[in-house]
Amino acid sequence: MDFTDILKKIDANRRNFAANVERIRADKSLSDMGRAVKISRAYNAAAERHQALMGEYKAAKAEARQALLKDAFSPPSSSIEAFSAALVRADSIKDAHGLTRMIELAAVAGDKNSALAAAFRAYERGTYGVLDRFGEKFPAEAYFINKLFEFDVNHGEKMSHSARFDEKIQTTGPGRPPEYMNAVPPEDEAAGQ
Figure 1 (cartoon, helix red, strand yellow):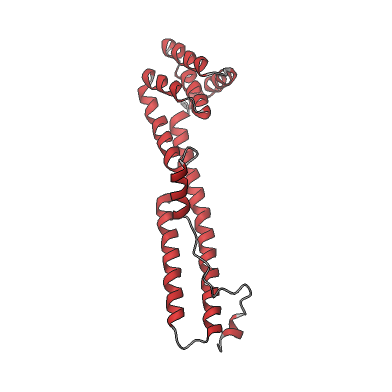
Figure 2 (figure 1 turned 30 degrees about the horizontal axis):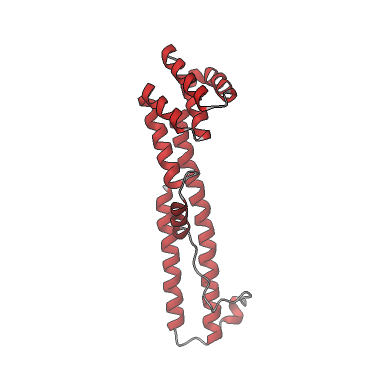
């Protein structure tokens, strides 16, 4: 399931709980204790549902990012050994200039594995000038890196503070109402309230 669909379910859970609390509060056939018990049970159920949805949300987001990461940086299966060796070489290069040089030399030699390995290390390190150079030399491959970057900026590791705040608001669980009771009596004891 798409993680944006899960955000809609989180919102619906929050809204349904709020509507349920209002219905319980409006029920004049219940005593104050009866309302508190029903509201507490409704809160516990909504909070449990929220926790389950948050687990789904985090898993779906991680799955989406992993798919983009694979699209951006996975070599063809026939090139895995060459790509692994190129990653080791790229890892030993400590500065952006060296990674850019590796991309340029790989472009001259027609060695996409080395260029992709340098781009991967540059992405990990946040040296985006190197990625610009990769995009100039390998525009088709850069498309997928741009998709990954777009995802990370909007939903992942590179989110701005305001985007993180927006996500926090979207993933907020149901609010605990003032009537909430920490110890809710079993169903049969509360039946007569």
